[in-house]
Length: 284
Figure 1 (cartoon, rainbow, N blue to C red):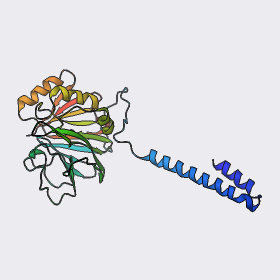
Figure 2: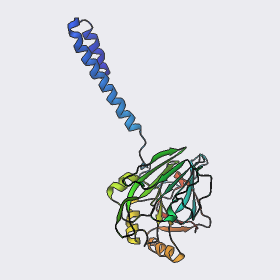
Figure 3: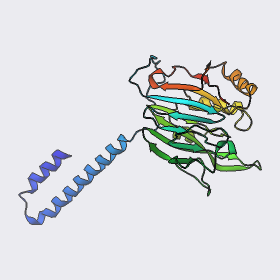
Figure 4: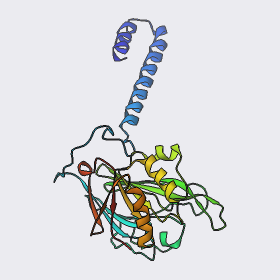
């Protein structure tokens, strides 16, 4: 297109004034074309949400680089984790008054199924308070950047206390930092649609409620895990050892299970397992 515009300019330079409106039309068309190209380039430059950075069909070499961006995951208990980025941003999931995430915190996410998943009185020093539901009803969309972390949500439904459906009452929150995507399923009550999976993108680490009753049953949760296809599964939201062991008994036939002594997990993209692994962190 630039060569055509230049040639058109040279050709029309010798034309009379009566022909100049045609030149203006050509220039306007060229400018519109450049604007469209610029817009397309800008759109293409937008980062893909949790992109599939590594081909699923090619095994990856596992190594830890001292220069790699690291993300730390601490299991506080129940459904609460603290995610800390290489830049020092600290975010707590399912922030509540019963299982307290330690300060300082830059952002918190909450869901409303039970009071152990939210609070009406968050610490006023927390700058970003992200509720997974709209208190006025309807949808709610979060897509915020806090330092070197991006936080966004994908809404799902929950059961209400009369066994009906509270539409858009829960959110799966996705945390992106250091080329790692972590998804917290929240108080998930149903299986996911293809549109949910598309919105999530490629998830590396999946935080999964495994109680099998208050949230989705184990069969349904296994289907959810299969559809998402994470590299690391971290169980949460279990009320006793037998509940946890029941889940682990199901998944151990398919995936390796690793039990940690400490409630912390240091995540580096290049060191993620090639095959899906379940990592159990101690918590209450």
